[in-house]
Length: 185
Image 1 (tube, rainbow, N blue to C red):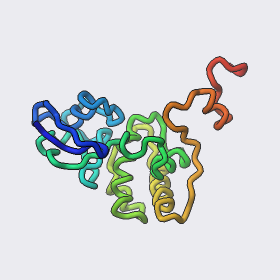
Image 2 (tube, rainbow, N blue to C red):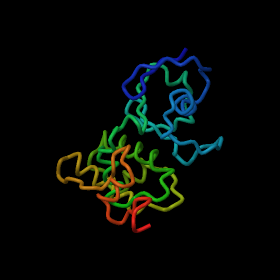
Image 3 (cartoon, rainbow, N blue to C red):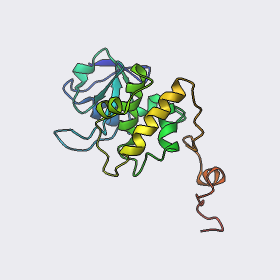
């Protein structure tokens, strides 16, 4: 039975050791922030997690290969969306549909763990994730901005609402949002 640490919690899986880590995370642990693209030859990066400090595609690593390792998913990066990469992605409007966002955030967070001042070339190399919505120009600035925040050069004041925020509460913070059932509906 494969044993590993997921989001700082020891886990033992009673699953086939050859199962991709992606499906163990999503199906057994209900960590559905790590997305699945459904293809056999992954090139999109939506399933990216951090394994022992390195961004890896969880569809490409088996439970057996993850044995004894430390895995961080988007849920473990920051419970309240306060990680600088998450905040910078919102502040720079580097999110469109959001499907690829968790994988991009994880790849960016891994990059910034080893290099808090990445160049544009560093970012492009470290984050090969595909985004059909085309956030790439804003993505580079978001990662550089997150790096500045990590180095305490800049403070990010984004409007990323923490999980569990009601639509009415979000509408109070972000005037462009209209809460369902409000007079403006």
